[in-house]
Image 1: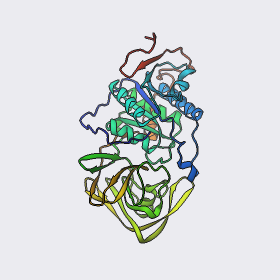
Image 2: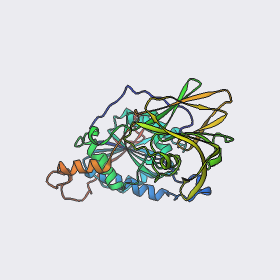
Image 3: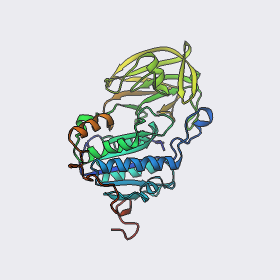
Length: 372
């Protein structure tokens, strides 16, 4: 459910309200797309996703969350995850009339933003989180990976990922201490701006909507916000040449094309391809990079737009993306505060088996049935 058009980027709203509310957004189709035909990425089943969400909710409530807001969708991931959980928290299921399209995530984020959700736990890949960042760039995220491109989200165990979210939602841990702002790539073409969290790439002789892994011979310009040789995708290409961490105030630009030095790059799980590299360099924040046509623009692995033969797009890397929770650091701070000592924990030493009510609401907050 990656975005198909440029999204709002209103950066004036930087709220962090510790009211105990954790939002859950799970992309039902992440980890299941056609790219697995050409690569060997693991398939994430609906049941696996439900189990991950259940673990995250248990962790969040244990660490202090008092309210869970989750998105409803046709696969019943969140609704199935909480159906049998007897946790000491209010649970609200938000029905956004999901149709398994990019707009589902957009509407869910808008609904959770309107509810002043303190922190969002997301289940998906780079594309899912890109959609969220486009709608709510000042959100605080705990991103868990299940997508094809998983540089932005992490492989953290959902139980402790949820606990980190609960610590922030309850106000025990300040996001400023363990959730730094992420970098985003802003690409402007024809007066409109789109974003990427990890990579913006130009591809020759390609087409919008192509979901297969990129052909290395078609790559022309690669701009990444972070790079590491242990990543998968274009972040890996830049990482083999010039690593750039989450914390570094810079990006990396790689020029590719005929006559370049051949590099073997893990462009997808289980898939190495050869990319001819002409040059590479470090790019400072807010430094304009021109992307010329005729090419197709890819954002975080999704081919979205075309650049004509006489057109030029301008890309810049900025540190104005969502806050991303450092789960390890959040748990360290929570432990130091004594949150998990049974004398201080909200749940004490008893099992999380209190009765709860699941509230089902439309996106505008009106009840779907008589539950409130």
